[in-house]
Length: 136
Image (cartoon, rainbow, N blue to C red; front, side, top):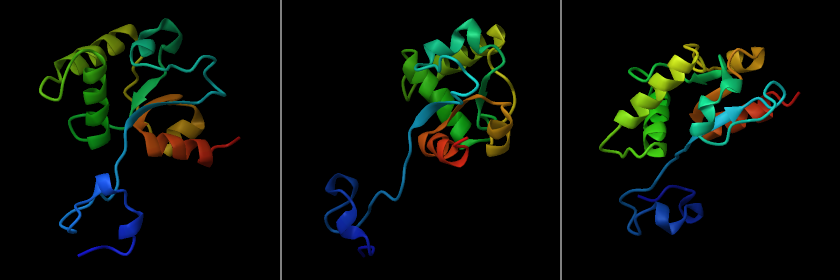
C-alpha cells in the first residue's frame, strides 16, 4: 500500500515496494527564549554555565515522558555516551541539577509563554513551534 503522498516521501525514507515508510520524526533540540536569555546556549556543555541557573527544563520526567527520555539520551550522546550507554546523560543531568541550572518544571507552551522555562530541551518541531506561537 502506498499512501497518497507517496511520491513526496524521499526515497531514503521509504521502502520501494511500499512495505514501510517514515511517517514523522524529530530531533532533540535546545530551545531558548531569546527575549529572556541574553546568550542562548548552543550545546549541552553550554547548559552548565552559571548564567543559566534556574533556567533549563525538560518536557516532562524522563521515566514517564518520551521527549524527556530523548533529552537524556541526547545529553548522553553529547557526552561520549551511546545508544547502548545512557549513563553519561544521567550524569550530565545530575551535574545540571547540582549546578542549580536544571529546574523540575515541565516545559509546556504555558510555561514557555510565562517565562518559567526559558531554556527547553525538547523536540525540534515543538521548540520551533514556540517561535511561531510566541512571536512577540
